[in-house]
Image (cartoon, rainbow, N blue to C red):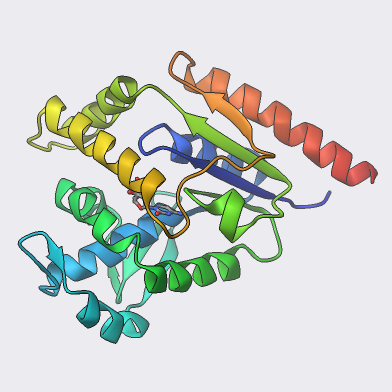
Amino acid sequence: MKRITIAIDGFSSCGKSTLAKQLAHHLHYTYIDSGAMYRAVALYVIENGLVIDGVLNHAALLRVLKHIHIGFKHDDASQRSETWLDGRNVEHRIREMDVSHNVTLVSPVPEVRAKLVQLQQEAGKGGGVVMDGRDIGTVVFPNAEVKFFMTARPDVRAQRRYQELKGRGAHIDYESVLANIERRDTDDTTRKADPLIQAADAFVIDNSDLTSQEQFDIALGVVVKAIGVVTEA
Ligand code: DC
């Protein structure tokens, strides 16, 4: 059976990675979290003093960009692919709020996007991949056989992210999580370089009122239909 490319785009915290992991697991595909790569660059600029008073030292980032090594390694214990930055596992660190706050400083930088898009295309070549992000169906894999565009109401997304961070022991209040989500929605949709837009051929899933199982069943139906069509062609 042909191993296709599945692109999942959408707003932050609307369950893209949950669906992507479910599909990858079910189909025995590789899951790639493209947002983790932008988060890793954000962590790099935080740790290397390239953000001062909320302002990114753009010139310094461009000087070091080609030396920043971002990759994924499969962790046998967790059975997950984890994000590495310059030889260190940063999978958990990049989910913390300071990284979430600073990621929109680096994600609009065209040179950062060019580097990460190239890494993503490399990682996904050959198919059998589920990748989630903001520009996967429009820029990274415009020819992906299946594209999903996911959305949910901001309050629903904030509640889910809040519970997730709380569950990991973070000291955080709901209002700041909601504010961060709303700010990232605006930043993601209004930036000049590869903004979040719905691909014309994407299947839209609003999961505000769907369980994760319901969402998975809908998505798998779309994928099975696509694989069937591809296989018969
Ligand atoms: O999916 P996420 O919330 O972990 O993504 C983190 C940030 O990275 C988000 O604010 C938008 C940005 N991003 C992007 O610009 N392009 C992608 N393909 C993935 C994420």
